[in-house]
Image (cartoon, rainbow, N blue to C red; front, side, top):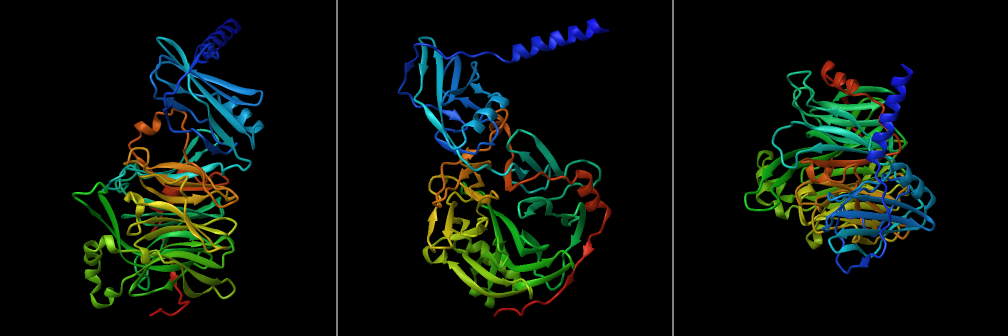
Length: 511
């Protein structure tokens, strides 16, 4: 028995050695003026010290590749064969980034060709002092869809490559498994309190807090429509939603094939402790959407489109009006004050008049220090994930200045975004990779309010994002991991009709 064990250990050692090729720095390499091309593009970026290894593929021609990542006297050496896949040792990577926090690492790539070795000009990786939140939650969805199939909400540990399934709709436990899941949101970057929506026969709003999962039925005759786009109050179990009547339309001749239109939307307040729901704004000619609390919990930022023509047409014609005028529908950035003691809201305040210069905003998110509002700005509409004009902008609430995140924006779609809890990082969805599939990108936000070049979420196999035919959707960062199980969410969806909520009036309609 002991001989057998020794033999197995010997085989494991041989296998381990064969999988860990030792690479040497080439001597007498010739410096080339050729442009370096790697995927993903991890050149000249700022990264957190706790990010997983930035594995990449070399797209320049070569038979063998060696890369050296150097910081002072410390260095990592890795390499690849003809496939050009550079895979770093996780332990060595973590050790080097930890010791180089606040410093710059130089990266040198060597390529072997028939004539010998060439070397490219160095690029750098600047290691920030501040870490990024360790957990990224997202939905995987086909980029253009008509049926709710194969949807899932997942959580990735960005310091490693570990992925946890929060919920999937295609586990065939029931014949009615085909349903949409969306709009996951966390309270104050804490994964212990979250919610997401389920659409379909067993639909409802799932709220997970204090270790339990409950399904709510938020439908009420006093509420316009479905409650979506949630935001948790940072201090209480209160949620603001927008209540929307949305639908999909499709272009025939544009590259931007899908259009999500909103023919009616209001702001809604929900008290998760008392299970009471209220209208914040119920306005017949204004559409309010994408609410977000500030960190102090005394103001809600949102987007609003003024449609005076709605006063002259029946509700049944609103969708048609929006479809026919889709490229003239524009939303401004707004806010409304909140009194915590009385749980009442003040008067709407214009924060940025986007429509006055032919633009439209969506998804305002306030930085954890309360100073900045990050939002998406596009040419029209409020659902910018297919709009190539969509870029990230920020408003400095201290100075009032509004400006683009130039260093992190691209020529393609840059949209849905969220902050890291320390305010030094944000993650967003971008189609810059291929124009079709959104991938999560991270960008450093410095103390001067400027963003830096964004980088794609690293994968163990750098080719994964080329082979994955689904989009990452609604990236949200948390400090900790979701501990609720798939079974808890599944049972709440299928074993309960949904706890009804009661309506409570908190302010009169604004005319």
